[in-house]
Length: 530
Image 1 (cartoon, one colour):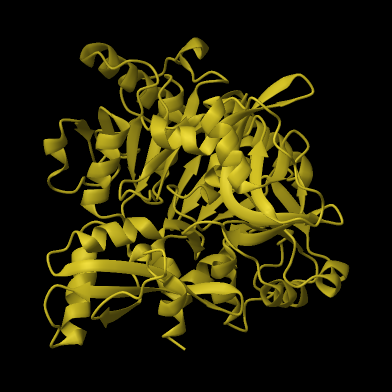
Image 2 (cartoon, rainbow, N blue to C red):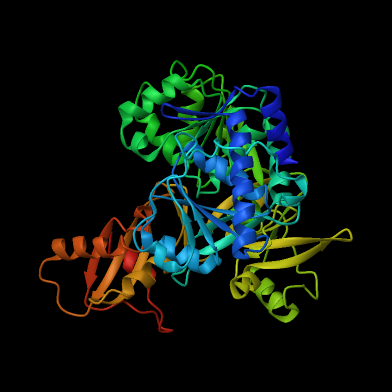
């Protein structure tokens, strides 16, 4: 299993660097000893405080070495971890703690003020160095393997945007993670000594790909943080020193890098593969990458958090670029299924069957557009402490006598020539710069503000890709200074939402346009922008 592979690398090459962030590095030996120490400490705390197995633990921070140590430490004693990036506002951290039922928050940073009042046990400024280091003391014993998260227990939980204004916790088991890793490691064939780029925050499920592909194969994870990403000079200096061979990021991050003419093979001479997931890879971006990095392959992947990072892949060759625009997202991993179904029929079937379909719904033929359904061992067991939303999104699917967990993605798509084509969302959930966002969550938070009577948030697309969010506001009183009003609204939203969910533009309206059935006419709103 995964932890055994990491342990084996710690024995084989203890001084090899497992993670590098800035000037700090973490060896496989330090990862092993530190996670053992953290696990034993957490086990004793759980016994003392009556914290039961599989109770999640929040791990709060950014790209520190200690984040990985704490992740592995949690699973070594049967606790799934919830990664929360320090860029999120304190209110969202409070929401996650409350919704998850977590009893413990661990962090290499200081925890924001006010979190202590949530009643959780807080252990902050945890470090691998100094007097209170996790490596100090007599913590040389190894936690028994029986304490570890088992195959069908939850390994990690990623919180995503929720339409009710409260984030949803997607639970992924070790079996789901092993299914994903067995696939990507056999598909992309990383060797020992590979260097993997880590661009995404650990709270974003794309990071699961680079973190665990690297750790399972004895590689080095090279993290770039939010400050480096905001400073091109620092970012490119880091990339130039990295010797990255596997690039894992959102397409948007690569597009930003492509704006600099030095982003080419001479900057990253060891680069073998680009692995893109999280949003649409445009034809233009893929074309530029193949031109600037002729010795590297470009891989286009697709999958939601609920299906463990990704479920399809396709190498973007010159023939693919010549034949398709927009690009397909590829072929399905061997142990899973992607089914195209009629969304309305499926809703009716699930409603009558209480999560187990009484009849086999029709799978639409090739070329027919419908809702993308994913089934297999890689599918989440559901949303943590949220049975209502779980029942809406998950059901059981039987195939050849085997029952699989299945997930309704809410994505539209079709198969053509055996390739899957993603065709956008069926609802109001979107991907912006790799982040999955429920527009309803932003709208709910806007409507809670004193001066807002109604709010609608829409994605603005350019060249087939979402560029930013536009908010339409009906205010309770006339707005005299729109510039100041927009600044005030953005500042108020930042108390509850991360920066990537704040709309870039706002428009104030006297009233919302309505359709004949009494709903907000979103097409009319978009039409008013042209």
